[in-house]
Length: 536
Image 1 (cartoon, helix red, strand yellow):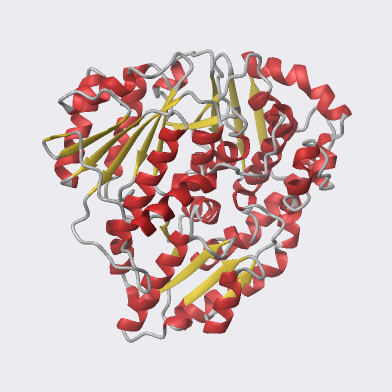
Image 2: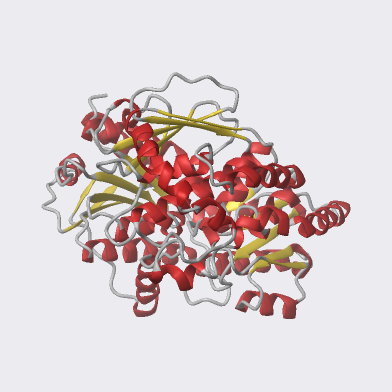
């Protein structure tokens, strides 16, 4: 079978011993495999009834492989060798992990930042096809990305319809419109699979297969893993992982995920969405914190932190106290974590398939775009950084404002950094995450906006009310209009940031917004200020 390895210590091991026999007796694994929608209680039955198709995704996706590979050959013969994926959350995170792990080129456009959109448009347009992936078919970000690429193809004298490939649920608005427009190909995914569980469906396979990944091998590994993950056995790693994640007493609800040579590139980012969006609701949940080995969260020994180390299947790791080590091939790991998250949902007493708080930020952004209120004036400006506090007693400097925000952190709290910027062009900003963790002694998440709204955004609003938030936005050197829309990408991302801040504030979560009037100068200023707080 596809190799899977698992080891646990301390509180994680105790949780497994506490819950594993009951999970086996209740036949949780085999009932998940049989798509039993009663596992998560009466309130979840209706949603679970239409969200368990992922357990058979590896087998049911087989017929897609030939069609994907044939389309890749056709496009290559026409000189199309670069693929841009327009997708958010579950439509983009899995294919990015799959492509990066295989070492093939896939440009993931999961942003509305004008700089990031402009960079994707500027590169080798003549060689490019865009894959538009949206389960609902109405995702605003994805629709905007499609519009601007379709216009760019036409302006360059290219046949736009022949360069657009669509992945969506059957019967969605995008499905119908794409067929009427004569786009190159339309792939329908299983409607009974939620976005964050869709890695082994058309949403994961079409982009990565077109980019050149051996998707048949990916499915082989997942199918082999499915045989053991569906067994009602105390040796079932999915049951053990689910129990370790959600069964500690008291609950260690901050899950620090560190890669220790797993060979899988960016797996933590995919697992982050799966776990946070599935469990963060009804005031409970598990908050994944993607870290590097040796970061503060991995050595702090905090009572609410569980460390997960991603390793290669044959790697011997010396576990510290209260830690987990998980290893396996990519296909087997994808299915393992989906099973384990479903198990964790049962132990937490929540529905792991809905996302009741995700729509709030989207609705707030739409409202701001429609009403066009006057821009919020900064409380003050420090150099290249405009400071806007949401209910904070901000001081007269950037450092004062940061200290004030961090002072709101409780002993069981966390800080969420939300960067509505170009995640490739401003990647150095991620340096502040471990610095802030060191300065506060608390877990710190880092999310690129607006993609985290389709991911950890659910936990921020629906999980425990212990988070405080640092939001970063920035002026773009040049804005990009969205064809057929009365707003630009710059206006869209600004509304998304402001809308989410408003929703967080209304939910009683402290938010500090730093707007970089000059991105380069402001970035240096923020990094310097955080470094000083951390004593660096």
